[in-house]
Length: 215
Image (cartoon, rainbow, N blue to C red; front, side):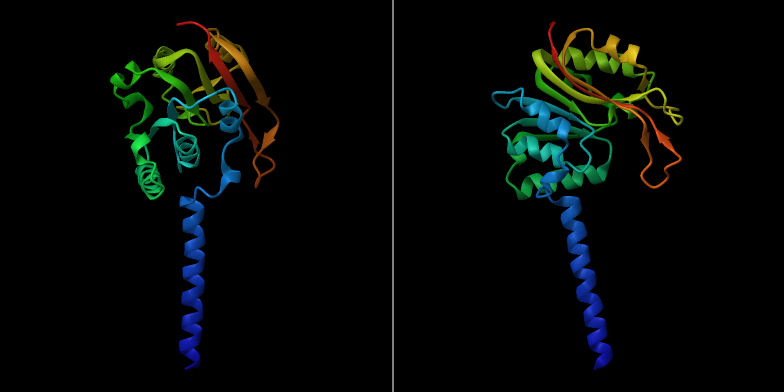
């Protein structure tokens, strides 16, 4: 009998912890996890429109956009991302405004870029674009963003020691990329260190919100 209660105790504990982990992975309720870059960018809009979410990940920011009334094209190359986002959107009756695309950036069908987006959002994902493809990809993004549309992105500094096969940029290169945009917010996070290995310095991050000023 004692053994039975011990087994029951561990089973209940396991189920509770699993549920918490599930909530953490799936739950949109974790509003504190919504990216400040997204929250700041949304302040520049009077009404929702059509958004492109590049590197949607767990989908917390994707769901934030959906809850705000946006129609969203969410892109990620991870099948788990697709599962999490589609299920969460379905559970919250948001699927009608969501189109998920399972692609790496270089494999995205070019007909997507014939659409006119009001908002392009990429949180720490553009670094994973193939450096050889990035110039073309950047031009495609610029062309599918409406005039006066908003771009909210992170770019990674070229002081990344593990920059192989990643798209990283110097400050001068970032400024050149943004020549067709009005800069609304530009912050450089420097002197960052790994939280668990203080001796490992992390690359700079450019936090950018910009408005397209040319067609």
